[in-house]
Image (cartoon, rainbow, N blue to C red; front, side, top):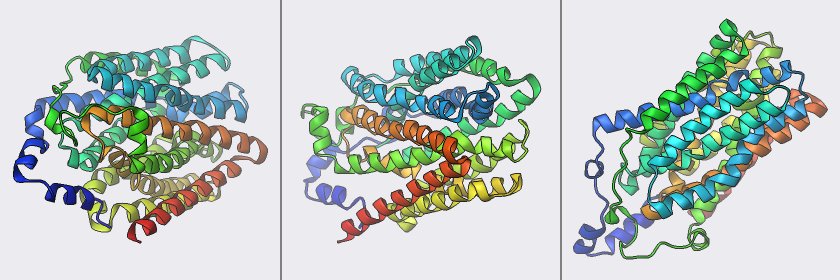
Length: 420
């Protein structure tokens, strides 16, 4: 089934005058210049670097402090807990204000505060508080993603989110690559000090980000239509509900693996802090490239549903293989393919979440979507941490693989229903 067929059918049924009045404006009409794009891209890179500068060393750092697997899982997952509570109301508030840019600045300050908390308090309290505040920083991704989407026509949302996913992964890759090196040269705290500096620069940079004025005919609906309540929006947005459920599973896998316990598996295989960099590169570089290519080449060629199913199956196999990799080299190979698999569905789910949503409601829809997948950020590592405490790392990775198979089954069944 052509995912754009419904949109094309509606457009075909309108008069030329209607189309001219309500057609989305091209990117240039909302002020997308090269300079503005570069500023936004740089701010996005700083944003993700701030949050991910310490991720590869987080679980080894917490274990070094003597914390149990269950407590480590709680701290890692608390990042998602904050987002579950904040992202949806933040999106609704942003839509009410019709502003995105102020939230970017606040998010950067939260990222700075997160790194400070890791440095200032001992035991489990400091890391837990720091991770909770990092969740506040991450919640601002609602405003980042909707602001970037406003630079493009609504029917280009999948392409736009593919580019944004690429920027996301490059920022995460830069931070995570530096993490192991910083820890090896200056100890665990070097990564947190660097995160403070990056956040300060990023906060200043957000002041120069361009925010287009609200343009009525950029909306998928009539300019005169009142904004719906969030309940009404959800009732008429089955695609948003579906991709949100799939994204919960996707984030469970991500935060069990690369953003959770995969670095700890590498340390148990003898990896030093510096060697964690190679693990990060192996996962993130293929992840970045496939994210960029997905919306442009892969999904148009093979179909969005098929690509999502293939991504979940690949992630399931590679996650299951982690505890059986046998060596650091074997682990690196499994995670290279895991990065590819997860990049097959993340940008597509992000783009589909807002594809059919009017511009004036997109922050609300994105807030709902991101609040939902935050459940996976919390539940995935929390449950895997508990399982790891009972049966070792193998149990947690097995749980992640099972979620991957479930995600593939859900996407495949929906694909069959669409074709039927």
